[in-house]
Length: 79
Image (cartoon, rainbow, N blue to C red):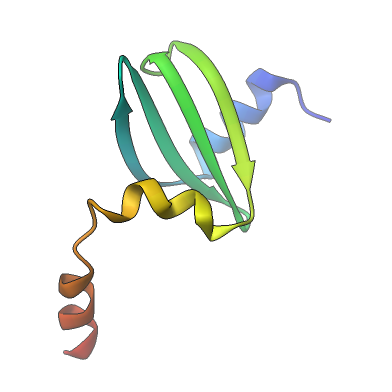
């Protein structure tokens, strides 16, 4: 098993950035990697990590959906 720092290196190098949201004084960044969704919560962006959460469930996307314009995706997909 990889060390925490090595896991983050893989996430930053191979993960696909999806979105970022602010909660209080923290920033939570969502990535997709190898069929998993990974959230990294930072006290100080990319320097001080509060927690990391990994899930296969799309429910992890719920807090991000309010910001996404689904209509634009549908219109672009019909062209």
